[in-house]
Image 1 (cartoon, one colour):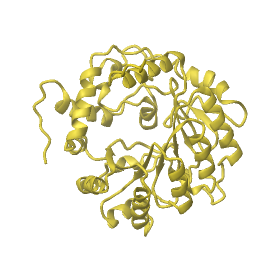
Image 2 (image 1 turned 90 degrees about the horizontal axis):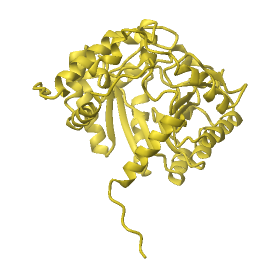
Image 3 (image 1 turned 180 degrees about the vertical axis):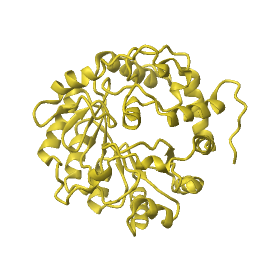
Image 4 (image 1 turned 45 degrees about the vertical axis):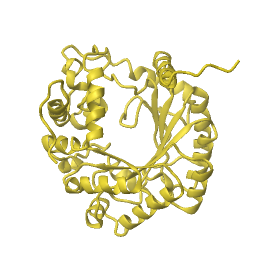
Length: 366
């Protein structure tokens, strides 16, 4: 007898069931590797700060054998989705080896890159083992703006050449940008550039300090009201955000400061081989050169989740917490404590609420 056709919603229900199980059992289904903190660009807003200026030999970077072993460990632990990022991951000659090991281990791989170092071997690798997505940072629609941000002459041309080479090879590409004072007037044109190429596009207004505490990136923030007005010009984003907020806004608060998936289903391994709950967290790490992934996941990373929300922690009871971009790890970088909110992030939530709340009458300007 032929098998009965499954309803169209069955795959999504199966995925939802899998994620519920992952949360309950703390299965690390999603993670990220920063293969290096080095980068060939010099973007003034980069959260890595001076770490990206490492020597050509990659001071602090772990060797190929380390990364191949960690891929095997996370695959065994249940990882299904992996982001390979940096710095610029294609700075490393062994990028292909690490990517191939992950992609042949049953893991869906996403790559974050500036696309200036896309080579023929990379394109051939992606043709053989297609990535889930290659997301490219674009810092302007014009050469002048892009290279003002990156600080490297010729990088705009190389970026677009890399993007077009990826697309010509049939790779799924997304473009993303940081909404900054320098880029705000070119957001619409960058979106058109993406659409013309058949690539997705997203923007992020959440600039935050460097990992070393340098607050210089904050000088490039766009005022919250203007930032959200620009966001809301994207009708698809506005619809998705409104649907998400409508489903989430009445959920009760959790008990931990960190109510996200960091340390529950998500992990991050930095360029020095330290395991953290997520890319933004800089505490409760575990050195994978001295122990195994399972040990770190079950030890320091698990303890990270035991930070209870203090009495009166206002973010937990705020209905805008699902649209502000709340991130205690970023709060810690900006205010010194994960329990002390960023006023900028809070204002983003207030402005988004004006567009997305039930009965909201504010309309985006075009």
